[in-house]
Image (cartoon, rainbow, N blue to C red; front, top):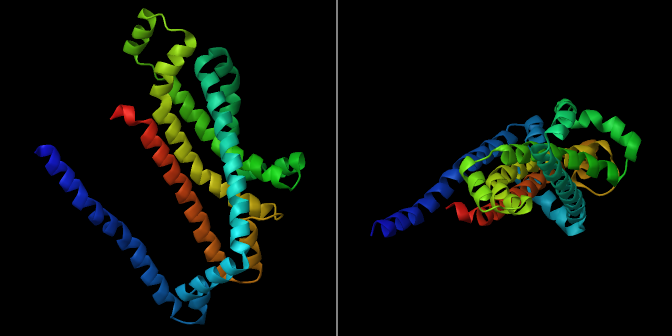
Length: 262
């Protein structure tokens, strides 16, 4: 009976939570639309919502938004995957090798203090101004959170599980697969979630800096030059939606992978 009551309570709470989550965005949209009607200068800074909608329709009809969104998604996806895998590997090695940790950690902790965009001139010298340079910057953005979170997750040992592994004489790989990796998984997934905003920040920024090829950052640059604030805002909203989509995807994967904890 209590379980049924709890389920019913959850079912009617979800719509309320959804409505509460919409209050602030709708309020901000109302303030934005009101500000756009206060004069020409306000209309330029706060583009009327209908103008943003018309710009969206126009970009969809010409295919320009699809082309540039796909360009950004492709770079963000490749960079995110490469950086995450590299970070997972290095974080694991640092957790298991004290010698490697002593050698690499000082340099790693020093480099990660440098703003990624501050490395742009050096990266441009290495890779040029093409897609490779952009992907490298994006990969670095997801690399650092994964190294730190993987290391923290694998360094956290539960003595009772280690004792079980010793009693049953688990091999290194079996212990890693059955004990250490499941323990570290929440940290690793947190690292992936932390990496997503950095991925999209560096994706857009690298496209603005290396203004070549398709991408939302390139479209934003053109819109800024032509004083087309409506197109610029469409691009900003699209970047937000792409980041939200990646975050939701990681959240769904996390729920499935962590079912054993419930």
